[in-house]
Image (cartoon, rainbow, N blue to C red; front, side):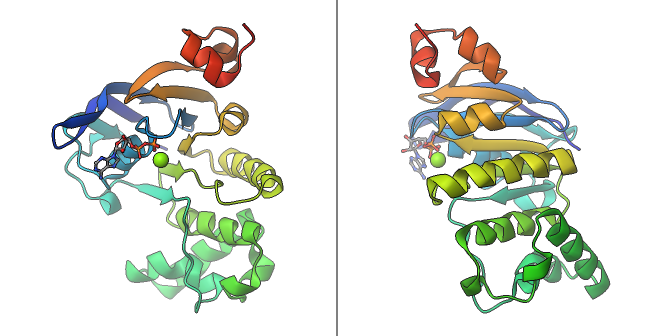
Length: 238
Ligand code: ADP
Ligand code: MG
């Protein structure tokens, strides 16, 4: 599994700089959560790691390679978005295998990867259903399954639970944590929800206005916030 390093990574949209030279080192198998108020640059940062946004300065390293000039499919990452769209006319099995199919993998390979992902996410009994016959949580698990069939080194999640109701969100948090423990993958997870961040993360990265305010374990940040912004955001006692 890969280490991810951001070295002075900058993003500008025209003259507007929205990410200011951030540095972040993520270890193998680490679960890191980027958290902060809306508009602080979390998604932009994640999309630069994914290769979905060009970076305006600095370097992104994944697994020891500088990936600045590599397209997303060559970065060994899989991304799960908030607005996951499953193909409604395809079965769960076909949805899970689709990205492998378009990469021209053999049917035997596809079946093996799909069965494995289905097993991990408890989707095996649902493989022949269409998305319309699934609950919200089951659909979300299929979206995660589509990411894991590719055996990426790094998983990127952008607010994957924000469309779910509170009960399902809590359930899915547990699922995601289990997934991490099983796969031992490196995860970068974006949320604006402090509770989600505190419960999921090995380390949290608190962002504000395009820079990083603090990086630490949830307990560390809770007990030793570096400033009142962090304290207020995390809800540390005064
Ligand atoms: P977050 O995910 O933390 O809510 P974003 O990374 O989406 O924040 O956005 C960071 C900043 O960049 C915001 O001010 C946003 O308006 C701006 N931004 C995002 N995408 C674009 C774009 N395509 N063009 C111009 N500004 C953008
Ligand atoms: Mg966002």
